[in-house]
Every structure is written in structure tokens, then in C-alpha cells.
Image 1 (cartoon, rainbow, N blue to C red):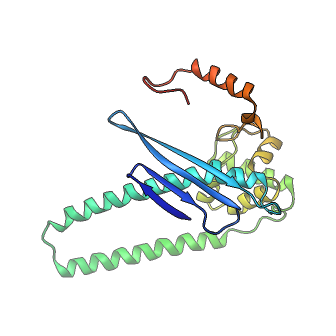
Image 2: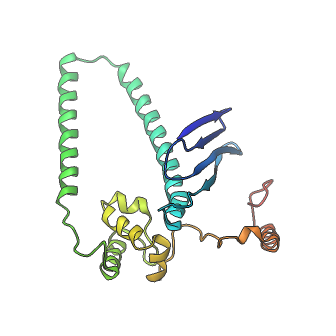
Length: 226
């Protein structure tokens, strides 16, 4: 990706090399009062004619991966800022070099133990027979996952599956048609807004109807409905 920043309020991105014929867009920050900032993103994509990517994968990239990546960037920056603040506070206090070395070594050892435990638990997860081929096996695994980690009646997001180490379920969903199709089969609601059908916004009557409907939806003061 090629990134360009404009006046600290907008970042535009464009694919340099990848699976899309073209993939570009913008992240834009808009101030809402003194304590709130609105983040908007706009995406424009064009696929290769002979592409192997399905519409469901493209939909997941735009509706799930991009927002998740933006949240990850935000969390990383906030965490880095907090750590920087803590390190500045600690540096003002007198320290004993021997104590620092011991604490650092203990900290590193603890990190290594945590990392090894995490990786070993991931490796020890047994493969589920038939998960990548049998829709009934996938449905069973999804039902168990939702009962343990999710919300009844809702399809788990890609990031939630990854968070709990169930990349195998994510791959099976993608292989069998995507999140929207599997959610429809299992009568589950998606965790994000349903997208309008292809060509919906090309119809002027649909556009007029949406504008009229949004006029009557309560919006924050001094803001146009969106």
C-alpha cells in the first residue's frame, strides 16, 4: 500500500501491488465538538476480470478488515502513548543498576514463558475432521463457538474468530461461500449493517427514498444526516 497524509486530517491509500486491479481510498478525521472525533473511510475497488476472489471475500475486506485495522492502529497508538508516559515517569526516579538488570531479565523470562504457552496452545489444537468440506461440521463448530464466546443469533466476526484461535473456522466459512452466505444458512444476523444489493445506488428513485428516510432520522445537532 502507498500511504499519503494530508494536513494531519486525511490519509489516502492506494494498492501498489496485490490481488485487485485497483484498490484505493481515504481515511478522514472530522472534529465533532471538543471531545469527539468522527472517523470516515471511503474505498474504491476494481477487480480483475479473471479474478479468483469471490464477492464475499471482497465484502469482508471492506466491511470487516478495514475497520478492524483502523481500530488496531488506534489501540497501538494509545498503548504506545501510555507506555511512553510510564517510562518517562519511571526514568525520573533513582534506580539501582543491579535491580534494573534483574527486573529486566525476569520480565524477559516472563514474556518468553507467555509466548511459549500461547504458541504451544495454538499448536495443540487438534484439527476438526471435515471442517473444511462438510457444512454440518462447520455449523456445529460455529454453534459451539457462539455459545462459548459469541452472542446468540449473531454471526461472529473474523477478528473474534482469530482472537480465540479459530482461524480454521474462518477459512472454512470463506471456502464455503463467505460470512453472509453461512449466516443466511444458519439464520444468523451479521454484526455489521446489511449492504444494499448491487446496483441499488445507481437507481435515482432509491437514492431519493434513502435521503427522505434519513431526513426523519434523529441526527446530532448541526450535522447532516448520513
